[in-house]
Amino acid sequence: MGASGLGGGGKKSVNVDLNLVPFIDLLSTLICFLLITAVWQQINVLTTDSASTTASESATPPDPNRIDLSLSLMMDHVLAAEGEKNTRINHLQGEPDYNSLMRLLNDWKTRHPDRKDVTLNTDSQAPYKQLIRLMDTLITADFEDVGVNTN
Image (cartoon, rainbow, N blue to C red):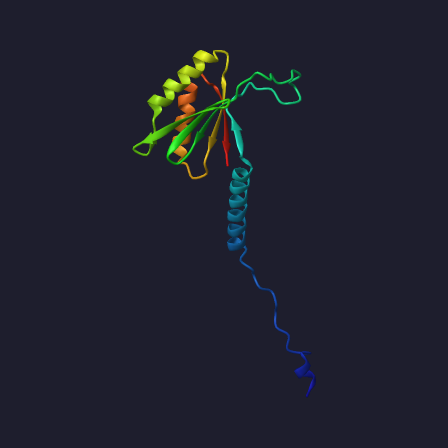
């Protein structure tokens, strides 16, 4: 073996232009995907009340006589809970019965005229358009502070 066999005299140039554009495209796509999914993973409770106070700002203890008002959107019915009293409103042709629901909400408003808050619970399988329409129905019935809880 001579000196040229050990790589002494015949070196080749290693200057290669590496195309970084595909790597940048992949990185930007991954960052966008991460940002989009990270935001939706954190949304469990959403409130529409922009003037609400935080827990640290509220100094008054909760009222023990307060009745919780909530609606639960299921795949085939809406469950309306006024404290311990539950009312089931079945869907009509795959959609919630908004007329019956509006009558119930008007009854709630008659019994609790000062209340503006309702919690809207939804099943993870419930259609998004039904959730939005229920929120609109609640706001129309003068329940402007709608808290959404998705499980």
